[in-house]
Image (tube, rainbow, N blue to C red; front, side):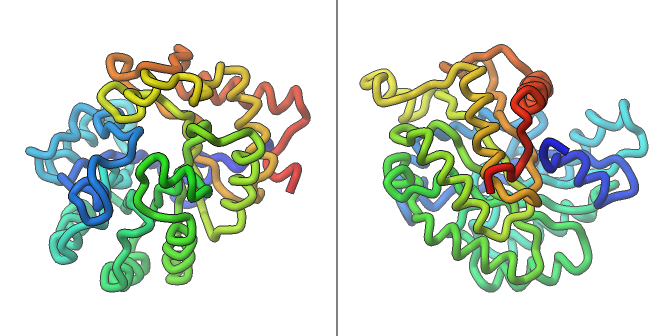
Length: 302
């Protein structure tokens, strides 16, 4: 096995085909509303990962139903994970949060939740509820790690430290809840050596799943403006160079971490760079082929 692949892992969790449906439940972030900071993370434009059906004027039920109709024509017997994706989905009044999660779980063919959030937004009362929820349904809590370097986290206006990330992941995992992580490779100021060290730091955390994304410059973000002013402070990877970086990273990852993806795809009209012209599955095929050429596999250097 070249790496621990998410699709295979899902097949081991469920006796039927499962698809995530993204939801935009109208949340904000503590570094947008002044609690932690203003303006959000410098790279962030949430339009980049919201499908057409994810509109806040629609209820959670309506978004799930539209998503289900979108997928069901291809796989009529498919089941779904409601993916609370946009912004910080554990940030708000706890009773409102619980009602939204329960609304999602009561929707037709929804058999679990994936909740995307920040490490500084997991109050104990909510974690108590999630521990109970985890006893009766599939649950994955996905934290935005982004970087394990505090200097980078400060530079991208993340509003928390790596120590806070570590603490949140350990607290969540200790309740028996599956924990996912998300990192961005190629953030400004991070060398190849720093990125590989990140793989080892991430491996020390009790993570079940991990998503890798390349740095993308998105129109309308503060980072895009920074790039315009100082392009030499950024290293935008060519596709083959990034593939080798991903493989170096994966070789330094704990072998049991489930890898969900290697790249992110932003809408063409929002993307400034890099534009590789590859779909996710095409990129993944190239990673697998290159791993075979290199005799590589997940955890090879651990």
